[in-house]
Image (cartoon, rainbow, N blue to C red; front, side, top):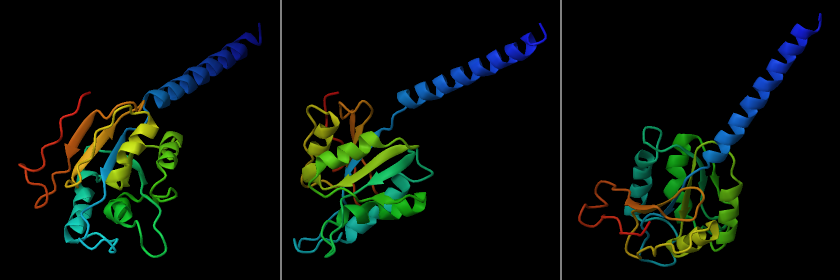
Length: 198
């Protein structure tokens, strides 16, 4: 009988630890990150110029507000294509770099521009806090979505730079297409989201 209070306390602590760890595991499973997939900012007419143009840099500044600390979003991980030594493929990085600096986050550039499978793999392996923002070339966005599990992703219009695709876990649907509505860039008449089936 001398040991029963000790055993009871031990049993209580063991049960508490089990319940807590189960709750944490369940919480983590049911709160997988949402993916926000966007196109890089506006580009120059010169195809050999891989930088953003004036409007593209304005968009990069605008994203600091759209996805920043005072926004409804909680971005914890940012992906953009690998930038080549000669500067090729840098637009997507430049589009999200100011935001990343504000949030104190690195921009993961470990995937090459045409490797959608790599992007999907990094998204699915992410187990940190917050949601995921992917800045990419519009021509590869549908493939990235498909690699995640979306069966029929929308087509990103060539003339638009403002649209964001929302892809929540389990990553089988683009549930929303919406405009960043950057002042001076995205006029209301030109920035209405595309209708998609959800």
